[in-house]
View (cartoon, rainbow, N blue to C red):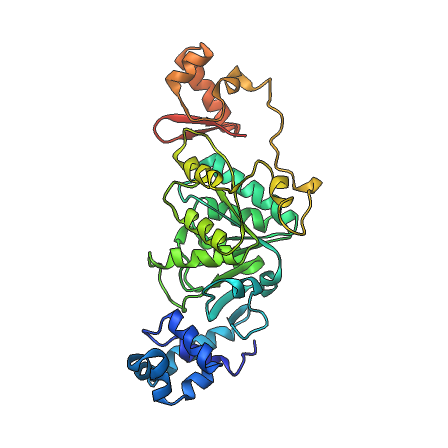
Length: 361
């Protein structure tokens, strides 16, 4: 792959240790392109960023720059700068767009309408199913699904996005060449092939805790709206939702059981003005340029009155323990246990931690 000859200057500027994103933007605002920054007299640099930064910019970073340039020449790899035509236009609208983006996969996805889908790492089985089903419906409607490659809801959303034409973008809190968490390595490989991996962090950057909240602004910034599926009251998903609201994006949330801690974050968002979503059509009708579609339905089928064992009508959709279910159904423990096992094997019921069971839609 051919590489822009001016990319070395962008890399030299952004790979300088101790040079933060805000300082980089200030220098670019003052001097224009990175080559102008690097060629500016030391006194002028000091007037914008101070003597420490002026000294840092005089140090050679040839090895790091060459390594990044070599990486960018590989098939499917790209480094996108603020001056690049491929730079996502929606990111130019946010308060602190990154100077560089490292990408692996289909760059054309950056120019397509997108929806962020985020949620808990400790997702319930039903929550993960909802995230994947909704993401697939939105992908079928032409939206690219943006999420953060975390376990739980993020991973389910990526799988749903990959299942249809809209595909998916994974925004990483590591270098784009670092897979984190490791259990999502196979999913990351699928996204690199059929979707897009994206990161603002330099190659080789490990999974540091402070990087993940920072990348959340890009997840919301790339999208027209943000859908939260299961979130605790204090979670990274709510950071993304707040970033979306601050960026002027629509915020949506799936409601859940009042008994589930993972519903409280979404319910709080709804109280604060997020739009409640019960079907894909609810969200698609709110986004500019999208209409209700027959093929993008996620409405649950009518309840099965002939469900095996007659337990499902007694379960509702809230988690329930074995003893309570025996009382509700008026059946002995042995019979209820046997029917629960049968329903679990049939994919109608999920066993949860703490001896609880939950009906699945």
